[in-house]
Length: 212
Image (tube, rainbow, N blue to C red; front, top):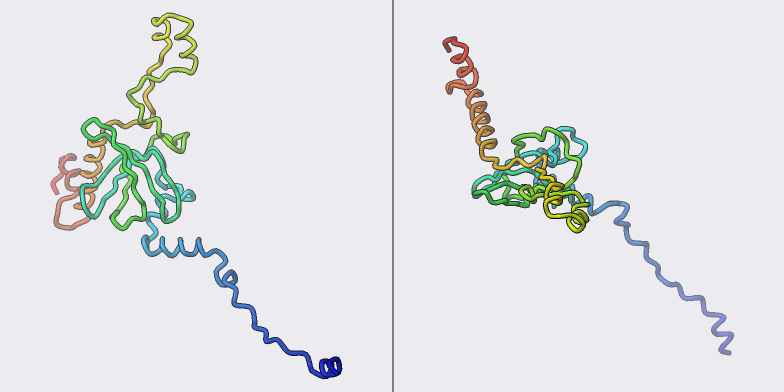
């Protein structure tokens, strides 16, 4: 009887649901999309992105003197000794001398507190290193690796003769003079763009002896 009743009953249908929509189809790379949206929000003109882009031939490089302006406080200028490209967290390390003391400052490129970043002076030659940390030891006397052996086997006078004093190529020392000259030139060109204020052409005319 039980077998007949079980055989007579139809199999129970199980309700199935369609698979949920795939997020990968809508957004294959969510992290890259989020980063691009944040960069477009923080840098709508794209000037900072182009300034530190590897594909831009006129981008800022290590060894250049950069001037950073903030919403509050004085601007900071220094030699760029490191560029850390991390999307929205892209930052640069600037080194300068304040009252003869080496000072370093990490600056977030896309930070809302940063008003602008300007290139004051380009490096004469492209640096062979990605990080110019050796500038921290500009005043130290650097010798060859064999100096330790020479010190052990020879006298102090021979070891002193073998020591070589080197100065880093990209060490600019005090940057106040360079930054002041850049600011004067920038203000002069800004005045020259106006019609009423005397600009670069007026000063050039006085030097040439012509009346303006």
